[in-house]
Length: 384
Image (tube, rainbow, N blue to C red; front, top):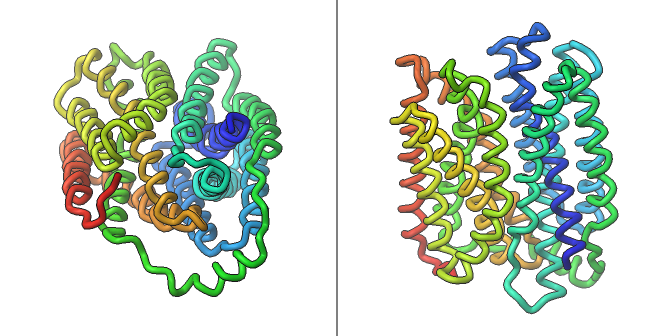
């Protein structure tokens, strides 16, 4: 079982960590050393999320195990290719393609990878599947991206060489990610039965409330992920600590998913999700109302501790409610999350321009998370 989770951790570190989160610490470097500005940097981020949204839609259409494994392989491979592409040339068209491909590959890691592992756990263990060890890969990816940028900046590497080095790191992650993937048995009778019953499958009770909650969680995530480093760097006294704060988010994220697994067992899935969402809301309010470094660090800690917990618990819940093809249920929910990633930065940016601070998008995000808790508590289906 541990080798399966290690392979999944490497897959998520690659497709979500390196492929996505490396852009966060490298964006300021690219803005200093290339023609990339604030607006064009934001456009590239949006293109990435559009790629992710497209990948999730694609994953939703995949039913057969063979097709899921093919998508998984190409997602891992394209994550490596897109990382190298970012360092090839100072060309916005190439960067745009690379960010879209990177986003598309992220869906293979988050949706297909999680679905394959969830299905393997369901078929090969007698315990309730828990996905904390898998989603720790996103935290590992954040740590790699943050720590790598700190080291590369000390070494004086320019933006291009940093992307190339991250490309080589992604190559090393690709090997265990693919070769340690869960090997599922193909049962043709089961596949045929699933294909015939696809259109007749009813959505779980309270699904749309869970969907809306996850949309709100995605909006809050993209606001935190976008503004955490920016808030630190907006204060000249703390500007040099931007990457260190991002590193704190990553280090906190890695063990947090295992802790949330324990909380879920101890108290129930519903309570664990409500706790995680509430902590994220508190982190947003800290960033909104306080500018002191100690509060910013607490907010970063709470964000790192809560955000992957929300994702891991929600995906675990989705997989449990659709054990025959957990990836499909995960894809349905992830569509809402991905959509919020696409529209969230634009809405947050408009709100931030009202008074020149991040106050309004931060407060709005926290209120949406509180509404998400209310939606969870009102679900008809008992979550346990």
